[in-house]
Image (tube, rainbow, N blue to C red):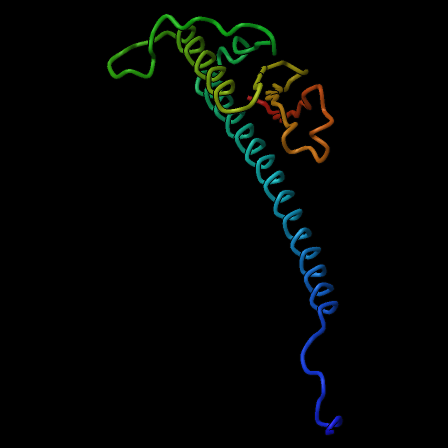
Length: 160
């Protein structure tokens, strides 16, 4: 018979399985990078929001530099109740009413924007320290093992 003309052509099943295994390992690596990218993106978003919120209260303090010291508030201290809506047109507010309105709105924004968001304004020598705290556990690499929240802080030190 003609044995020389009868050759095997194509890939063996073992070669196909090895190729699929290599492809699967590569795809898992890409998936892992995607998860890390999402975690870092979420963390960067929280930090940018904290910076925005810190600058927001700083600009409010700079609008009334004579009473900037009255903006001091602790992390666990309740924000003062605003007696007027100072952002409404035609409403005239005193400096104290404006401060109460600004602090109340700022604290509400911090709590609504950031997970477990807290904020404070402190005096450190001639400087003001604006501290915005938030829970950054979701961006931690081993977040499944965390029982306590991982608090991150954004601190803005400035003069008025």
